[in-house]
Image 1 (tube, one colour):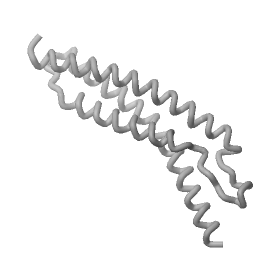
Image 2 (image 1 turned 90 degrees about the vertical axis):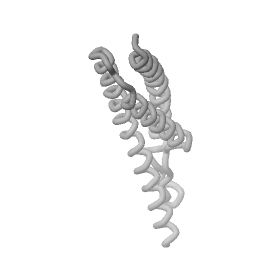
Image 3 (image 1 turned 120 degrees about the vertical axis):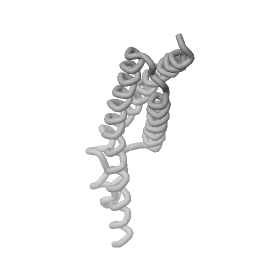
Image 4 (image 1 turned 45 degrees about the vertical axis):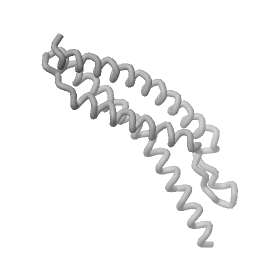
Length: 131
């Protein structure tokens, strides 16, 4: 193997291990987020607490999602920057990038749910303070 090929193989090996770790972490976060939604009485507490909506998602969900996003961004940057001198390495690099993108799409879905809940909570507090 040439130096470029060795570098590409090492980087892709590490990226694939990181992807497995990120998928496992994301699965845990998804379960935590789903459990939080289910246990929060219809996704919030509108009718209780004088109409105040409270986001069902604990801060740990946001923190984990942020960590996952940063990890995926760093992984994609690293994988994009390595040379892939052979067709096999080009295919493998593309495969890692596609898997990372797919994971990011799933992460974005949960991030949007969390952000929507936080926005609703903020608006609810603002309405309540305005009264």
